[in-house]
Image (cartoon, rainbow over all chains, first blue to last red; front, side):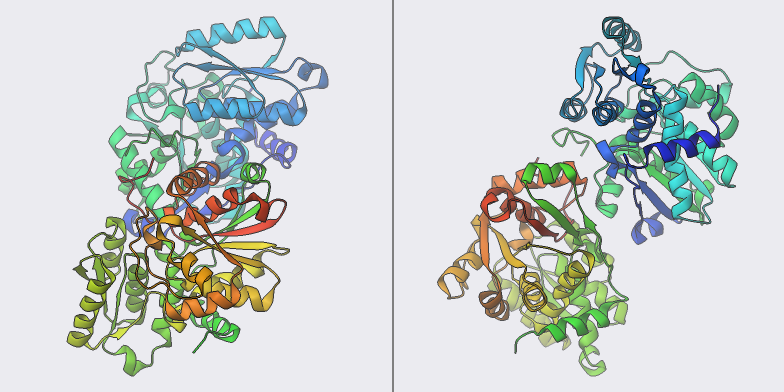
Length: 312
Length: 312
């Protein structure tokens, strides 16, 4: 079951009253420094401070009353957890969120603030899945996977619909890839509605999407070690199928390049974004041959981080 | 010579093509936490990252060709210096900026980036004025004082014109006060065009405006010690005359309250603002009896700071 452009349009109509239409931001100085015309889609200003509000809302409001009656559950290192807790609260149902012990405090607090029940577990994917299975057995809650879910992918794709409505003559778009929900959903939109080149950007030290894309075989076991905590997840199966077909390339960036790009976003755009958001600008600066003199949209995916634990 | 509403309108027309119309920002969470409806005027997204771009542009483009021919000069701990350098660059004239040794690096770098000539001096007001006098003697440049100048005050007041055009039913506005240019210029607009209450907000450890306002006698000598480096300046003479007449009150906040408010702005609004900008939210949170259930506009004055030197 793949995701179609019509699915994304339906998602847009379904979640319209639950999410922000976020603005595009730009900086004359950053344009000069990059040699390109950059527009930044400000999903860090989205509800819950991340694009994840879109997919979670689409999934929760896609459930029948019967399916929704026992609540929803997921495992998440943070933003999807908060987004799901919020969507559940809006629908008046319960949310059970399995959170790995290495999750950032700011993200865990957000889950609780939206009335979500936090269940802690070890950091491995196996531990997360085992804990989630127990929760579902106990509660009967409907699982909403953070990214390997067609409803979530369609919801994240609404970001791309907004971008195309807000600007024109785009040459390329650069999107962070972790589990691949945003990249997959957005690529469906861009590749059916435009000629825009679609690039994923990924930390070199969490390069499962890159390796999967290059080899054609999905990497399902890896040990990421990146400050971009939102991109530690493993590329999903449905996500990979879409990304293989529709994405032009995946670009790797180092941890130092992420920090440098994050500094630029903070100091030029004056925006508080988390490291995961900075991989896009890092990629644009690292591969000028791809982006020089082009109009490029970069998605700032989230702005949730511990201010006491900054990389500078 | 005081500043009239007509002066502010003329400034708006004069600088229109040189400054941004900055947006108003809001946060549902901050509204809940403050018990008020808060709108933040995003002057940290202004050109040069501060409202100072307005006053400097108005002053530089008010000069006759003869007056402008030898360039402009000022002393500034930062944002006005960068703003003046930029305005001079736009007009094609030179700018000589006297900068105290305690100025923040990010601000000094910005002056150079706009082609301004940086002249370093000691931090005291006396040292700054002596250095400026030498520069003017050497170059014949026209002095553009950072705040005690009617053209600058009128320029800063254009911020208030935009606020009134962008929102309605405001009950109060809270504005940082250092030298008093923004507070004076804005109060001229609010008090002639609306019934809005106008409050200044000031660090308790740089309380010369507060003491001047309460005593009716301008404090001209003080030794400020605040992290809000933009508010260390001494209240200007013209500024005081306007503020005495038009401002409802000046509210003091502690350094700890500034840090706490700055954290909230960074984490809720996802905006990088300098400490000077945070005194407004600090004041709203400290004096709930003044602001509960009201619609309040807070001016975020600037976003220039060293990311390696954060208070958290």
